[in-house]
Image 1 (cartoon, helix red, strand yellow):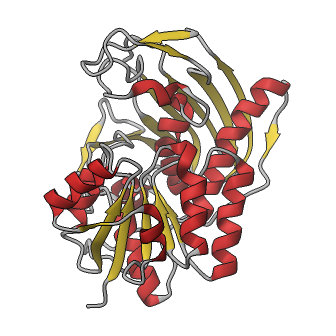
Image 2 (cartoon, one colour):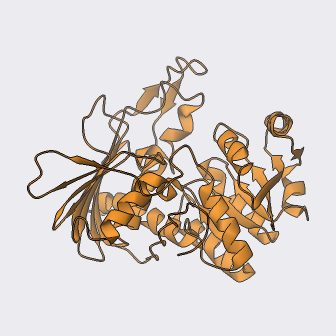
Length: 364
């Protein structure tokens, strides 16, 4: 089988699951890794039996077809543009970029070069969300008319070894976790045409209590409690709240409300279930058996799908187009909050095809 040769840039916490899972994807081979801290890259190379390159060596290497960009959000644009300029396809962690202007630069350069861009999250390709998509597409809850989504926590400073960047521009609860929720909503309901938002910084400073940074003060430079209202193209209305300011909550992650019933969607930051449905006459929620596999931590399945697209010439599901639409929705929420006005989206995207029930990467 033809393999797409991958070079990983960014060898932090998230890289391990990509290194591990890429071993099981027949159309991917990780051939190199790099990091500004070359010691981190060497550690991963030793663990996963690959070679270490400097950043420039990796960009220019004829042995690399695709750059997996796992850097922090502020470096996403620079790394992606350099990789594309060197003729490499790019798959990156969310978000696509911090600014809309930079996100468009990435997509424009990829189009100019005839290259593909893919972006996490790819959790929507797991069995939980794909089961939800199957139920909606089959009419199980009728026509979707509304949705709610909630990500409520008190931030990562109690556990993350380097939590400071979560409170800077391009992060916060909206940019850090919003892509999971918005990507799922787009897959289940469709693109968005208009948003309204409110956002605030509740605590101007945070104190890290994780072992690595215990006692350090973090300046907060991005909103930490954000609410958005969406008007979907198909007429449905959605509500999203993302917060790093909440000590406890019993709200569901995502619920979709249809003309014939309601659907409770699993945590969009996971690949599995459970999935529940409640229809007219039901006294309690009914758990639904999952229709698709890939229910464990399958992070990297979007990269696997994109590799298949490079080989076959077909469309990939975790696309740069959808990532840009998600990015504009997030910016639209913050812009609406600042301007006291609705924000009308200028972008849209295709809704990805459902995954094959066989759980093989392919197209229906």
